[in-house]
Image (cartoon, rainbow, N blue to C red; front, side):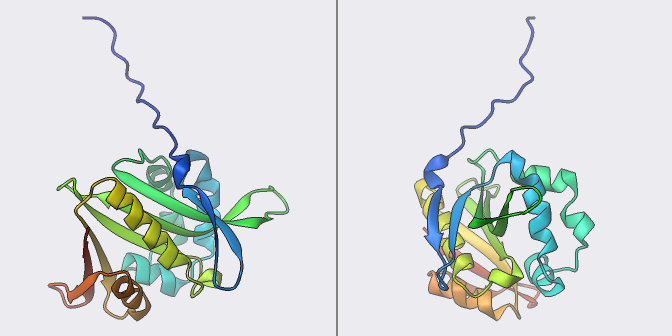
Amino acid sequence: MGPTNLNPVTPVYPSQFTSPWRMKDGTEVTIRPVRAEDEPLMVKFHETLSDRTVYLRYFASLSLSSRTAHERLARICVSDYEHEMVLVAEYAEYRDRQTGELHILGVGRFSKLRADREAEIAVVVSDPYQHRGLGTELLRRLIHIARERKLCRIVAEMLRDNLAMQVIFRNLGFRLHLSGDSASVQAVLDL
């Protein structure tokens, strides 16, 4: 038996999903697929999330160290772009004075479920940039990519008291209904 190639194939970066976008207040951002080298930026992004934002996104009060653990962020930042798509919004003009790095303001992601033609979707936006349309735009772009990938359905789960996200999902055409535990709401969009 000959040697086997144990090195995984590096996926082609889907640069076609990169483009500028302007928030409601005029702030210009670039929305693009995540890259492996974004891990340090993701750590800084998580530092900007309030306890309330973390709770609404993850249904629990997760510590910063657990959210920024290398193993977790590596799974998010090293995407195959086929079974999972992660989009980040970075501030186009502001760079960190010390490092020169851009800042991530929001993250949206869909992950295919076992059904393979269905995906779960989620988004989180840094507290200072909420209510400017960024979460909605990230969701719109992920829905577009899901349609392009011939997915049939997108689902999302949110806490019952996350009214702002429920409004966004409803405005994007999702059907909402209480989950079995009645503490959460499920949003479903048939594509």
